[in-house]
Length: 176
Ligand SMILES: [Cu+2]
Image (cartoon, rainbow, N blue to C red; front, side):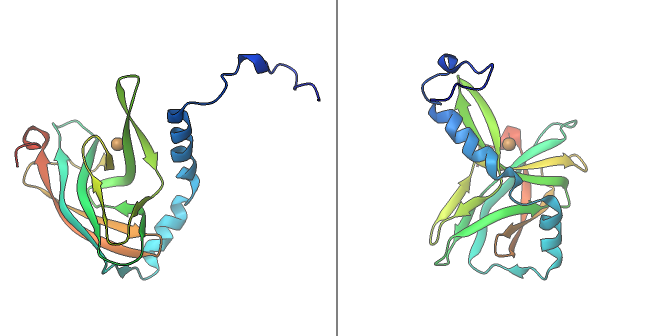
């Protein structure tokens, strides 16, 4: 057996990465799957409305002034007989939209970006506080309760689905 490369101490490694590390690896890898330029171009190539996908019960979390990032939650309902993979989104309200998932680790919540999410055929994907969610990053103006935010999601097949989401103050988030 060849000697390990200099400086690598094999005995110092734990026997196997734990589950969370594996999950983190899986989720961090597809981040480079679609370069931003391709994503931008895909909007110019005649996007088609996706008849099978609906956005229901959506809202954007209204935060106190001074916050540059907030989250949006909704149910993505797929009435078609094929899975729909959502690869990105845009909104006039923010510079960027990202899919994130929340996870608990060592008693602390942390978020990880996902390059895409899948809405199963005949099923739904719930974006909710503490789970998968959309992040609206670099807000162009503060969002207040009563405002409406336009959102467009785009699928891997270059279909789009749009919705107008109400802004719901974080103080009222659980009263509905
Ligand atoms: Cu997030």
